[in-house]
Amino acid sequence: MFWNKKSKDPVIEFYIPDDMNVESYRPVPGDRSIPEWYRKIQTRLDPKHLPENVNPEDYAGPGKSLTIKRCMPVLDAMSGGYVIKAPVDINIRAYQTEDDVKFDAEWGKSGFSDHGFIHYHGTWQLGTHSLFNTVPPSAIALKLVSWFCIKTPPGYSCMFHSHTNNDQLKDLGIEFMSGIVDTDTYNLEINFPFLFTNLDPNGIHIPQGTPLVQVFPFKRETWSHEVKSMDNEFGKKRHRDITVLQSVFHGGYRKLFRKPKKFK
Image 1 (cartoon, rainbow, N blue to C red):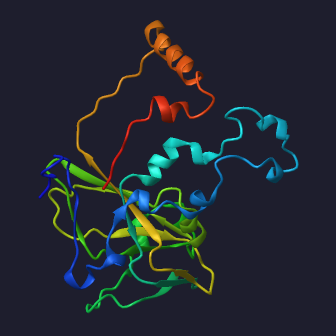
Image 2 (cartoon, rainbow, N blue to C red; image 1 turned 60 degrees about the vertical axis):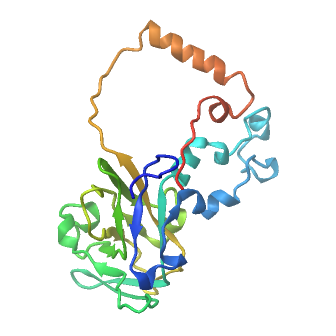
């Protein structure tokens, strides 16, 4: 079923083997995996915690003390789509040899199958990427091996990239390569290649449930583009929006311009 019978909304389907169809293996809507740093940050700056070289008076007054937590475009990017989490505990260790980077990896058992979650991707496939133009290279290309298939309605594809604004992945030295797959016609598992730059000999630990990859389904359409001068007609629209935006102390975009985006 590609369309919700009641709402007529498009449906993205994740097909998971029976022995893996448990909570920790299932993708979730993006709003259930907001990065921890964002959840912890306060909505307003605390003048007591400003750096010494910052004048608190510069942040006094309506709207001036708001943090990025009130930035709706940032929130929409993080809460949109669907998030693939680490289904089991994963350990990765990468180390340089004389002319290459090798790795070891281990993970928790996946149901009754012998599914391997981390595989070597082949550094040579990345050609002239800056991380791999030295001997030995300063990173290794790996991939998260998928345990499910994704299907979307006819005419819909999916974009995949690292979990949005997740500092935890950067700290671990993980950067997933972005990609688009036509999931309406492709019926196989989709693996997720990533660059691993953490060469700490102690390796890293990825706890079960760590958000890794974000999936955005979208409708394929043919677009054209035009570059225009900001003429008087558009200038009037721009001036009108400035007037509307400044009519409230804060939250103008959220209250007056933002449109709902729902992923269930």
